[in-house]
Structure formats: C-alpha cells, structure tokens
Length: 136
Length: 108
Image 1 (cartoon, rainbow over the protein chains, first blue to last red):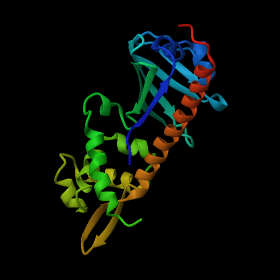
Image 2 (spheres, one colour):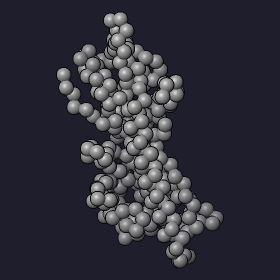
Image 3 (cartoon, rainbow over the protein chains, first blue to last red):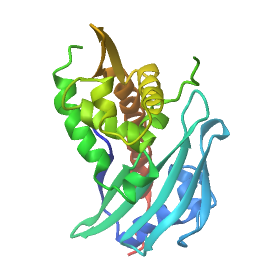
Image 4 (tube, each protein chain N blue to C red):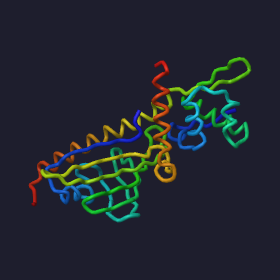
C-alpha cells in the first residue's frame, strides 16, 4: 500500500521551458486541464476536468524554475465528498534536459502534512505488516 | 441506531480513529482495551468503532462477553483505489506533456 504518488520524467528541454508548461494557463490547458492558475503564493484557482468536474487548488510554494506546489481538493466520484491533497513539482536541471519530479501526497487529512507529518506513514507501515497477515 | 456512512477518506481523517487503527495494526483488541487508550467516553469510542466498522476498516467478533476488533482490508482498499486512480491520471497527463514538449522546437 502506498500513501503518495511519485513520478519522475526526463524532458530534453530546459527547466525554463518545462516551468512554462507548469505555470502558464494556456499551456497547462494543453496537457492537464483548463485553469486560472497564477504563480503567486496564496492564489486560489481551479482545474476544470472532464464533465466540468472542478478541482479546487491554492498555490503553496513558487520557486521559479525549481519548485512549485499547490493544494489539490478533489471530489470523490460517487458522492461529491471532498478530500484534500498536495501536488509538488520539482525541476532538476540535467545535462541533457530537465528531470521533472511529481509528488502527490496528503490524501488523508490536512494535519498529515502540517502537524503530524509522519502520522500517515507510520500508520501505513504498521498496516502493511498487519494486512499482509490477513487472509485475502 | 443509524450512523451516516462516511467514505474512506472521512473515516481516516479523524485523529482518534487513526490512532485506533494504529493500535489495531499491532494486534486485535477488545473494545474495552481500546477505550482505555483514549480520554473519551465509552459511547464516543463506540461511535468511532461503528464508523470504522461500517466503512470496512475493522471487523468485530464476539468472544464470550467481549467484543474483539480486528483490522480489515476493505476500507484500505478503497483508499488505495483512489490513490491508484490519481497515479494513472498523472501518468496519462505526463505522457501528454512529454508529447507536447517533444514536438516543441527548443527556443534555447
């Protein structure tokens, strides 16, 4: 069981070029979703996905060409109940381009990534051990 | 007694319930033994247990006069389904981004 999502992709483009695709609404719309994003900490914005499904977000961190993070508050499919999470982008310059790191975490509750950062990890680790012993 | 069912994220959002599951991740416990770890009324503990039970996070077995709580996989599977959903979501999106960037003439 994993409690966060990690992806690392290498693009043969400069960090500036990759950054543009993470921060300019007209470029974000081409690969992610329609948005009114602005690279300003505290800016509240949305992504409009399929079926006009809204994801509510707030910019948490902006380090140009290096790091970007925002909260990601999505609805669960069946019943429109919301949950919070955080999306973190890191750009690492490489000889032949840029490594883009994505971490999507904090699916459980806001305190897991503020107050009790390790709470969820500890819980998950204990559970993996335990669940492995439960008959399927 | 009816309790509004909560989804897996709401169940696990509560610190007391997370703590209960953490304790149960070590071993099965009776409701009484579980309650001893919390500074809350017995009905409050029972309510949390009912919520976890309804969402498939624990099972309850009566042994003699005691009710034993054991962690159950179903609730966690629902959480995992959601995380998997987003994992695939980002993979699709990043593939799209890669195509866009590859087709772009570098301005450097």
